Image (cartoon, rainbow, N blue to C red; front, top):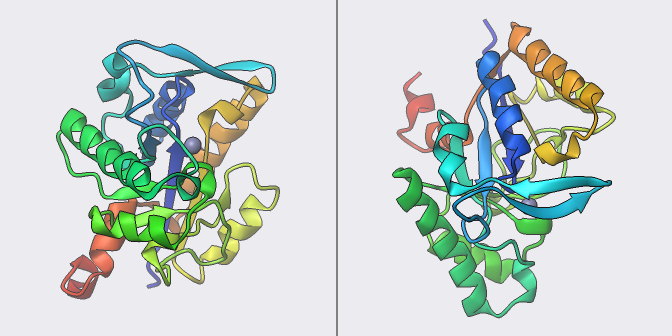
Length: 230
Ligand SMILES: [Zn+2]
């Protein structure tokens, strides 16, 4: 029998709407990664910026453990700069310290990265490798995201609001992995939340798919990893 397609998802920035999103994911047994900026959060929630007329707020450290309980945490840099446009030592600190603070706070290894604004260059990629990151997500779109030819340019399948989301999902089945990403603050209308819940339910009910975690994918594909033992 054909193995089910692995479906992975990740969400950026550590905002208060992640709490609602995480509740939906839990209800359907879905897995996900959350890409966090450890240098932007304070003890409690605080206002961040406005998106399409709606206030976006960062979560506070006081809620992080419960909101993200059971999910994968990944690094999104310390303060969300364009890493390809700052001095190399500043970029190193953004990457290394962003990761170290998340590891200390959550008490587990953090191996994933998502590029702030999706921008990077060869220097940034080298810094990520040097600091022990296993993969770094871009904002590109490819039919078959895994395995990436370069783990530091890990292109997802598409954004969660892509108009051709389901066509891409079905096409990805021949490659075995579908990987979507987004920001929970992009859902500003109740109908968008309802549509998102239908998406999560439909994926969960698809016998040809199963939820997966990104670190699990990368671990399993290593020589001697779980995939080779199957
Ligand atoms: Zn971001």
